[in-house]
Length: 134
Image 1: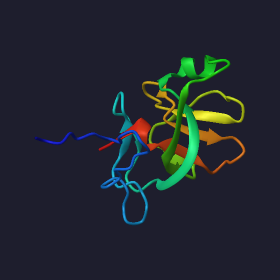
Image 2: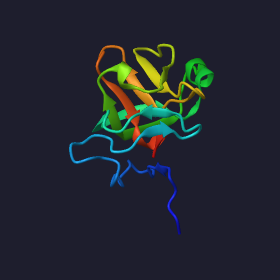
Image 3: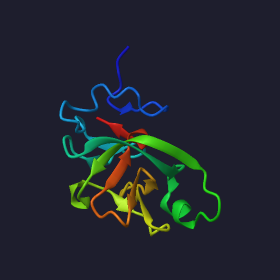
């Protein structure tokens, strides 16, 4: 049985990271959108980190911004950490939701694939479970 070119992290916190994280803790493969395969990050451009962050369930940008009241989502722990927004190949941001901007695919606007707190200008998190690796 042939393996797919796209490796999607399994749920349960992305326990199977073999081949995704290099010896120096960086992404060893390109990070791409699960929906349209647009490149989000080049290999070696993000650091693997574990931090509990809540992300609403994936949907189009308008659904994320307009959601009022209770928001359904996941608490995810495995992320790619980027310290400069210009490191991204292709990413968009939602309007502010409190002190957070969610990261979305700039091409198809699906997301959130990640999280950025406005209080911390140098921390952009991309959830491994919300992207593919090629």
